Image: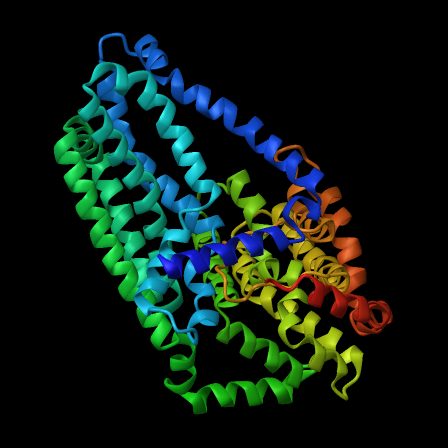
Length: 499
């Protein structure tokens, strides 16, 4: 308990000192809490009247049976929500390693603190009202209490531990992460195709028999907790990134970096950026997610073209935005914030500031190359008008979006936590949001089956072509603004550094 009290006190201190929470003012925090209650009220009301709605829709089927049959589906949904938007607790363990506290207590405390989040509030709002309206009035107090404990164990504790374990697998064993996702997907595919409903039937057993369900929930949560502690302890003892740097094939990696240094503009700084991407968790995750997205998007397009079908509007939207941007879309909005950990040395090193800007632009341009090549291969089987639209979108990315990302990154004042997951979203600034909107411009200008392909292509391609032709002078223009803003950027990184 002593370890938990220390961790909890530090968590509260960090929360109180966070300048982004309610804009750092009491009034802003009150407004955010009011907004949260406003959003949660309809969710709680919907949960409370769920039984009445089901009885209206399915009068021949008991509402209690339908509720019990659907409860288990909340577990993967809430796990995915936590995985995509919540930072794993293991990233905050390192500062406590040197303290005279128990390692097991430290890991248990971090796992327990991960339950203190808005996701837990959402789970309670989903489960509590339906329990009060349907379960508590239909069953005995003991059975109703067992149902509630089972539901909270599965939707809160199991979902939290599962999301954290997925984070750790992604950071240390990516193929284990892919295997876990494949196993979950296989279960739901079998549930949907083979029948009878496997997940629904299991859910009815777990929630329809309170004693058995409570025992199963305790066993599942206990097993997940043991697996989570083992994974967190392995990361605590031996950092996976250090193992990757000390093992593997250092000669091959050094050869790649030497080639980058000799070949690309501002090669030494580009190689430094690449090393940061390889060695940091958040940027490695960004590379993995964008690579999977590119394969999925353009694989769909290639299969459609080879089979002789027509390209869907959804593919055109995805291919002209994410399908081109790739890694540049993930790194672009935070291209300078990701360098906050060594910004002092980067800005003060005896190299020209224009080299820093040129390196940022080069790394973003290289991030668009895989998507550009894949999209051009799809264009070989498309009508000329759609191919021209895609080429115009590529020019827009190369000539407008990449310089726009660098321009907006120059105004960054918030460091990026590179130890967090790429899916651990933070509140974006207006400039970051504007950069994303700039990247999505092809989606906004896309008009399907209206005959405006050529005019839309000119609208996107003309400024993009001008930007590409001016790429030699673009770094000098951006450097002028960078020279003015670098001191404000450094002070912002120091002020907004996490507690």
